Each structure stands twice: as C-alpha cells, then as structure tokens.
Amino acid sequence: MDISVYFEPIDREGHDLSGQADQNRLGNFITSYLEKDKFPDLDDVKLAIIGVAEDRAALQNKGCSLAPDRVRDHFYNLFSHWDNIKIADLGNIKRGNTIDDTYFAVKDVIAQLIRQNIVPIILGGSQDLTYANYLAYENLGKVINFAAVDSRFDLGHDEHELNARSYLSRIILHQPNFLFSYTNLGYQSYYVDTDAIALMKKLYFETNRLGNVRANLEDIEPMVRNADVLSFDISAIRQSDAPGTFYANPNGFFGEEACRICRYAGMSDKLSSIGFYEFNPKFDKNGQTASLVSQMIWYFIDGFVNRKHDLPEEGMEDYIRFMVNLEGYNDELVFLKSKKTERWWMEIQPKNKIRDKYRRHQFIPCSYQDYQNALNHEVPDRWWKLQQKFM
Image (tube, rainbow, N blue to C red):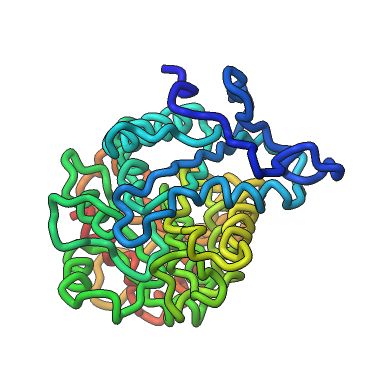
C-alpha cells in the first residue's frame, strides 16, 4: 500500500521550513512533504520524520497535538553536519475519524518504513501512540525489546482503557504478545505505586530510578543499545529545561542528559524506531521545549550517522570472548568485546534450544563494569533476568 495516503503536507503558514540563505541548515537538507501530490521519494532514505497530531487520549495534556509543527520550526533551523544520510519529513498523519483509525495508520506506516530499512522518528502527540508503534512489530512478526524514558510506568488502573497513562498495560496484555523485555529509564519513586514495582520485578523487566541513572549516565548506553523501540516522554525532563507539558515537574533529566540518551539511541544498530511524546506548546515558554526536542532529534541523527554495525551473531570472529566462572553456578558467563568499537555484550547460553524468534535476544549489551563485577563473583542483574526468560 502507498503510505502517502495517510499523510497531509506540512502546513507552511507561519513556518520557515526551507529556502534558508545558509544551505547547510536542515530546512534545505531534508526532503519534505510540502505540496499535495509531491510526496517524498523514499529511495535511499534512511530516516523518516512523521508527525502525529493526536491528543484524544492525552488526558490533562490536551494540546500536545500541536507539537509536531512547533518542533519543526526549531529543527529545520539547525545546521546539518552530515552529507552521507538522506532524511525525509513525510508530514503529519491525517487525524482519523476515531482514535483507533489514527492508531491503525501509525501502525501501518511504521511497519512499512521498517520493511524498507527506514527508521521512523515519530513526533507526537500523546504517549499512547507508543502502543500503535508497538503494533507495527506485530505486523512484522518481530519480538522486540522496548525502552521508555519516563518518570512513570504508565500502567494505568483499568486494563481495558487505553490512554497516555495506561498504554504499557495494553502492550503487556496484548495477544499475541511480541514484547520480549521492557526497560524503564528514569522513573521517580513518588510517581510509582509499589505494586507496579513488584509487577515489574515479577515480569523480569528492568526499571531504573532517576537518581541511579543520573549518577552514572554511561550505564544507560547498553540499556538503550538493547532496545528496538525507544519512547521518550518529555515530562521525564525537569521543568526548568522542558516546561512545555502539563506533567512538568521540578525533577528529571537535564536537557543535555536527554540529548545524550538520544545519541545513544541513534548509535544502536538494533533500534528501529523512536518517538517523542507529551510536548505541549500551550505550556511552553519562548519555544524552550520545542528547541530542546529539536536538539534531541539532532543528536539522535548524529548517533545514527555514527552507527558501527557491530551487532554480534553466532560464529562471528570480530569479538574477543571472555569466559568467567562464578561460584555456585555450573555454567560460565560468556562476555564478548567488539574489536571494532570495544563495546561489550553478554551471551546467554540456555540449556534448552532457543526458538528462532528469540535468537536475536541471545546477546545482551553490557558494560566493562559488568565484566569486572563478574570477575568479583557478582552476577549481573541484566544477565540473570534474561536467563529467567529463556527458562
């Protein structure tokens, strides 16, 4: 199906998206859908920006549907530092008669872009659109790892209700289930029910408190490197840096930390879609949040351009293998170090044969510190949780 039927051109009224005197600005670099019947040619495109002006399930954050064009205002004025990447802006997905119509369009567009080896950059809208992003992988028949930068888990209270604060429950309960693992980055304890934390542990999901990840931000890199999808809730950034959301709060990531996370995501060979949600221009101050989101996207692109294509596979010779014996464990822990990038992975070696659809999850990104801890007979928590999933 031609995905152009789902899109409407970018409304240029009030926007300065192209024709910049300086040819190195992104407004002159990106192929954009600006006129009807002139949809961008997707040949050789590697990254595609798609706006989703949808906020019917945004609860108190109505108005976040205005975000895509406000972000474009700032993003198109940034400078391009890359001459080896083709980027297209496909415009905004048409608002469906019902919100389910919008979900269907988002799902279909993302699935078709991924089939063409194009990474979608989704500009929401409310974070329930992450559920539609997840459904795209059902279309692809692909079991995935999902990560969210969020101060909450968004489990909601009613498993039948889908909105920006309950989408994760719908993902977990969806059948057939294509979720292998979930990682939260930056939750704040006072926003999270203890029962929700217990549920995450029971499901062997990985949750990381804001203070812990900010204390050593480099630990986020292997977590992000393991994700196929990253959903970024702008309210996870502190209000002083990103006031543009109803859910803004005084604590959260700094703007430069958010940009760093996005660069890690761009560098991940595994990550195949990313979304930015809950930015609401109605609450913004002097375009501060719109400017930050545009910079986060810039850093994602910079990371993408610098991908090293070093995902491990069985039998590959581009890795140094380290075997670690642990007290109380019959099996050795196997660590892999990339000769190309010096990044680290752990290899799960289950006793039962791994089904083909799970084989790509056999290698777990980790850090050099994980290897050091194993030498000191400390079992990496990430390894243990994945081992349980393969049992």
